Length: 331
Image (cartoon, rainbow, N blue to C red; front, side, top):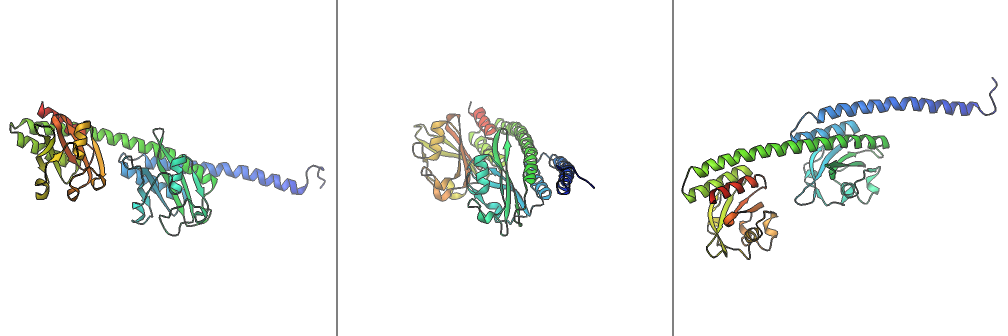
């Protein structure tokens, strides 16, 4: 056979291989997009936030052929990156907390860019969460126009993730972010519905008695129930407006009931009263203003009502409800 000078058998073979590659890749991409569509259906199947996060990470690990994975979100209170859902990570690893910029995950949050690391042992950013990990792929989760976390995949193989894997995981992260946003919206609506229900319950309790002490105890009791708190106390200003006295509590021990009155100028609750704004402290033992360290409870919340009523709880949910209930009673 005679070939034109411009086309040799070697060049013809190379051209044929290129055509074959171009023919195969769309099929492969189609299969991956089909898988992505199927995964999207799965992760959109629930409105429960924690269940949705677990579905996202489990399906991502399956889709990527990864050894383990996690959904890491920014704690809005502390600013730390925390693992909210994971697959095949040890229990100790799920307690890992990173600062923004720390580790590969923190780098992704800080820069807003994906990270594909073929050998984590050679990457100075890497922070180990599990033994045996050799490569990592992490992509940002953008919720409501802001980077709120990272979808992270690990593998026990070197160079386990390709550029196509990265593109696919980024597409999955877009869907995952929508799911997270929708579940958060649903949770907010559910909590607001709970606010109105709780406010009605507190109002009925308050209006059923003309006794001040009974009403205040009812408020602290309802606050504990609403916020799943171990203890709640209600303090009021004395006539001089310089001291806060304990007027009611629920779940408090004998030592707490006998603690001395608090100075408005020198205590954490005094700051709340003066500013008339809520305050949340992750650990009161780290606050120089807290006057009773030995009585400290973790995750304490203080917030004011008119006429200097202050509440202490264990979470910031339903603050508006209790605040309004207190206002209703004092008016």
